[in-house]
Image 1 (cartoon, protein in one colour):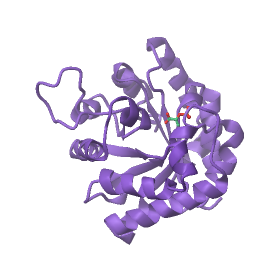
Image 2: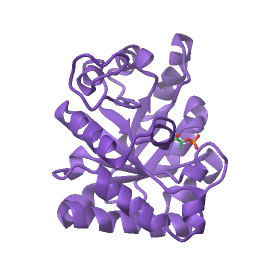
Image 3: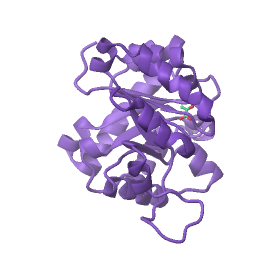
Length: 253
Ligand code: PEP
């Protein structure tokens, strides 16, 4: 399929992975042939404990790494937090911010997500800003309004296409095996692009990569990745199986 935006497939390992699991990334690198490398950007976001080792082991493969979260602060007395510059120092290119698990389990609001995205950009990282509605919000017909509200609150004002990735992840699709219809994804991604146009201007908005995330698997990736304005995937569970992650990436190529 002809794409105007180079796709990105990012794996979110969440709180999974000991040193022995670095072999998964090794298998991804081995299985990523030249054609795939040429067509798709790949990234793996491991737990912070593995980031430096993973970045080192993937050096020269073209596969990038990312953090799963960062502090809004640059440094200082914030026990347990990890600054964006530390992720960059460990070799990361991306950082996920505003994942629904952070929004729900850690009470992160849009202002916090925006501050984290700004901290990421200041550290030369590309934030992958996650947005998505709950099941109740979709059933109430509010999905687009909720997601556009999250964008308005979370996206840094001066973002350009190269300094921003947005991931649409319906909360009810994450880790559940459920996915929206292709039509619902298309409607949302068109709405996200339009909202980014309002926030950032058409030129910047037209180049921002919009990922879909939520139960992307080898069996549904081709359909989801062929939807208008879907420029790749944010993959949770399936990114822990090298063959599945590669199959999803191939569906974007
Ligand atoms: C995620 O956590 O970002 C995600 C999309 O998870 P899964 O693919 O497992 O639904």
